[in-house]
Image (cartoon, rainbow over all chains, first blue to last red; front, side):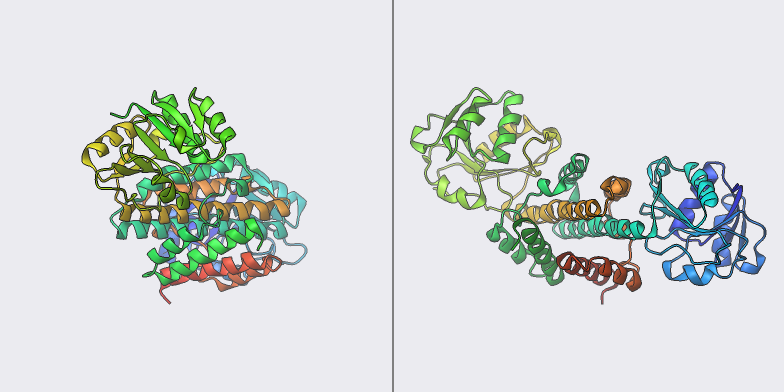
Length: 255
Length: 255
């Protein structure tokens, strides 16, 4: 049974996890971070103990590494083999530890920004483990904060992560570019909201390829040329517009 | 007063406009289309008259050209100068007609697909005219179907249209790519929905640049390289991934 756990990390994922566990009655006894003051601040928000050295770690049922991808493996080897360790990364394979040590992945498929609440009950939590009993315990733990717990292996998880980057990060970037462009021209992105929400509503019907509209789909090179003219002072965005339009044309018309 | 109007075109915009006007008590007396059968079908859905020749046109208070951008100007000159003519295009300047002829733009800022209902009351309708009295009549007409009627000149409208393409068409394409990629790998885009909705929720807080997350923002070249490896069999999408990631890096870190 996982009764008390330790969070390693003080970034956005760590913050949101600490809050979610705490609000759902899961006891976080320790927060370990490089920066002692950040670790203490996060720990104290749930009456827990903030530390900045592995040697200070007391007994815990589980360590969750909510740290950057490249810190995961070097950190993991510092913990006793007797303590199960999971990480929260979409793109990192399950940790390699001694066969007797329990290891796994606890990957919440969401974008986390500070000061933005998320609805944990709807967030898919992708689990993986090297040990069936431990996997059941992880499942039980994950179900305390989410209704959408899934078993996803490392191979599938990295594909999901790629799709998440394309779907979320790239989309946000395009929206941010539009917002900045409209602001620069004294127009508000509010005007585009109904359009954006309609685009998203299409998600409920699937087959998004069939929902494509716009000049690239129509191979309307006149409009594309007009848009490239408008972007004359934004050469990088112009290149990006062209790359996306060409991709759409090729995807739909196979040139 | 605009009491009875004529729609030219039988495509997606024409379909949605005919339905919206009809449902809000605006009388459409004629639908003119190249394909007589399509014009009759659309016309008869609102007990109107379908025709395929300009010479068959009877009296009408307004002609709305809901046709492709490159057909607008050649069609417009066929109508008597006594009849006001507007088009529905985001990217086409206001029609040039004789000074005495009323002309304008009636641009609904939305993506229209057949068989997908839209909420007209929330759709911004961007109006422009060469005549103040006629503009007031257009405003009154537009308010019958939308609560968001705006005066937008040709210069602003083409910028809005560009932003709409980036926001809607490009975003839909990225979602479609993800959906296909996940389907090919026996994963469902359903897993990404909470993430997509969260990304969109960020819209309500504005300043989307600050909401950016992901490997490109973090300059996490290890993850980017992993994703490019995953796309080895999709070279076009690999190029697009790289173009978008480089754009994000430059936009945020200015290299």
